[in-house]
Amino acid sequence: MLLDSFEPIHGVLLCEGEDIDPSLYEAGDISSLSPEEVEEVRRLHVSDTAIDREKDSIELRLAKFCLERNIPYLGICRGSQVLNVACGGTLYRDIGKELARKCKPEDATVHMDYDNYDGHRHSVRVVEDTPLHSWFRESLEQGRMEIEVNSYHHQGVKMLAERFVPMAFAPDGLIEGFFDPDAYNPEEGKFIMGLQFHPERMRRPGSEEFDYPGCPAAYQEFVKAVIAYQKKVNSSMNLKDGPKLDEVMEKKRKIIIRSFSLAKHMYISGHDMPPSKEQDLKAGAEFLESNTVLSLQQEKRLKQMGATVRNASAYLERLKMNERREMAARSVMGKMSIEQLSELLSFYHTIGQICSEVLEKKLMAG
Image (cartoon, rainbow, N blue to C red):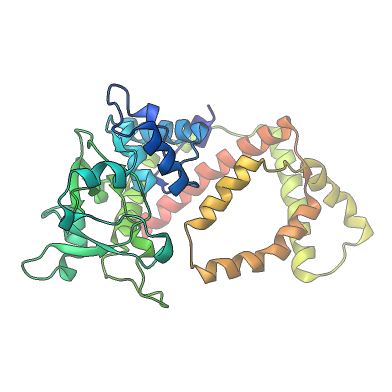
């Protein structure tokens, strides 16, 4: 229900998480798994099989929102599965139980190796004349259209939605990447794609070096599309017609900004605030007089987000460095009321539009 409040949205990157609720894609497509097999899968993949219907509804709504408006979308791992389901495609509830029955023994593929989680790789055959082909072209051996990719999933695309074209296949026939050819032109802000693997985590052991030079390309092209789409949106929007702060709100905004500026100065300099300035600080403290505690579900999702940067020691170090600043910020913040949240949302929505305008001018000037 809050999705519209995030507009304008210039791009969506959706990645990993739990299994999607099977009822969202199995209508009329009865699962080939018996109840006993379903229970076995749950035991093998405990963390993945805990269905989160709220997350499913939000992410499917978000994917459909992008498809309706041609907003650039890059789905990684679960994000690619969400994209396929949003367009009417289906999934294997468990590759090991379903797909392994269909393929030849020599083509059997391990898609999840808990003992070698980040190091596990399997080959994929790249489809010619696709974006994936152009990104990894220089790494493909002559006469072979294969690369080695990482793999962290026990589910995958079963029936690919009609609008998509495959970009890569695992030896067992599983689709490992797909895109919409009618919605792919990064220079024009068009990008609708799903990848089952994580190119950003395909690194050489003990190094930040990528397995292939083409690994960053998906993200680079996605960002290119986002910037182009943002330019198109901004050109169709007149900032003068956007929401403006009235005199009362503008006065509040200035007082709050001054209060936070003083607090920032105190933190950076390490000096106490003179008694004469304490009243200025009070304005910011009153504005942020509540700090909403995270629910268990939100904490779980944040941990999942952290899991997307496994082995990223630099990221963890930055988190530790930010702890002191976070503690200082929390000392200023209190609990926010609904009215104050609304004011903050209105303020930052306006600031976001201004930032978009300035960014567009800088990009055009560059």
